[in-house]
Image (cartoon, rainbow, N blue to C red; front, side, top):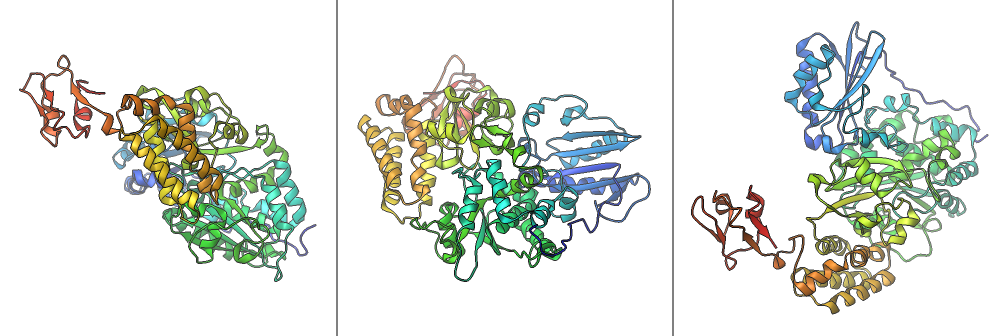
Length: 628
């Protein structure tokens, strides 16, 4: 028995007093808010009050007599392509139904209330999901299995009682009342959980290392890495916005396991909504005795402090992150010693990312075997992926490890937008790589993806199509890592800049075949010579682009051609006289008056005046402007 006192089992102080007849849940994640969901929530509240047929309540206000409607803001509901999303539960005459509408605007609210809430009629033209039958969006939901995001998009992230009613903090209670630190570590080890921040290191083994070291004053630290900086990645952001208490609980369980008394949440300042909800959650969790001194009446104390990061990508690397917390410039340290031995302020320290910690309470509650039963070979459990780019159903998807890229992109994601041809998926952000169509049937697990030259990373998947240039894509991601280099070690500081110069030269049509060979050699030197993972993985987009799309590079340097028409120095615009109607739309948008021709007659582009801006190509409705 771990506890030496009688512990207080966590329970909501203000439980729901009645089950509402109508339960309206509106996505208030960052994507939803950006799309206008706050205005939609306000419109529901105002219209329901105006109609006066239903008593409008907040989820925990005083009980209302008769029919009630609850209006709740939630975290991200997943299908970001259809934000703002509104989920409506109706409970009448012993029957229950659930419907989700997408792309909701305030103007749609009166009709939803009149037809659906009052009349019981589902409005099919706005339908995303219903329990009465499949829709075109069912494939996005049906293949998912939510463990990490189990309550995200369902509960109110600013109401701790919502989390407690969903079973929150019961895993921490179990740990403190029934388990020793060693038993906790063993449970996580047997689950097969690996770090979801990118490297995939076994979490239980990491905790075991930290538990084995002691500092002279007995102080240890437990850090949550929320410095999610990959372009196109929003997994950690959504978890923090939608269920911050799950991360707190995971941290507290880990801290108990390694013997830490102080925790830090390192979250970038560009996540204002997540930061706001973290601050609300930390304050109320301490007030309720779920964090802080003598948690739940036990002998275990754990305080969490919040550190806002300034947006440096390199601070996602754990030693640079610790430098930042200490008040210094975020720059990596030499290892060994590793953080488990000498980390924050030279004390034993453990660092896990948001997604890793958010799933820990589920493992403790449901058991290691239940988690290990999901997944693929040595990659157990589920993984959250952020689908972005040229894919129809952008959003967050949590799936069992081992699902193929094709199943994720074409099954869950619905394939490429506008019927375009798939070209590649950038896996693992700027530290990952571009994988071609021929690899779409590979299972997504750490070892398989690593063999391709890419990485699973934190879970970003950016889909690119035939209109994207692979050389320009590699240049973009390298420009990001080059600008984010801390400059401490020459291979990264100088090497990434030299590689970027070469890619720019190739995009400008000035490259040679010798440049391609030199680019590969330079990438190898940066990879093996850099101090930290930022430099070590920065060449990955270049390696994979050259490996799988070398023909496009050769087109740029030999034929002086960019097949996607992205590299402007290699593009020529012309007008097909057979297709041109003489509508003059292209003339009106041309900034240099390079297009001439009479109305209703074929027009001509003067390539001496053309600056290759592409405005005419985008404007033409008759596919008369050609790009070659």
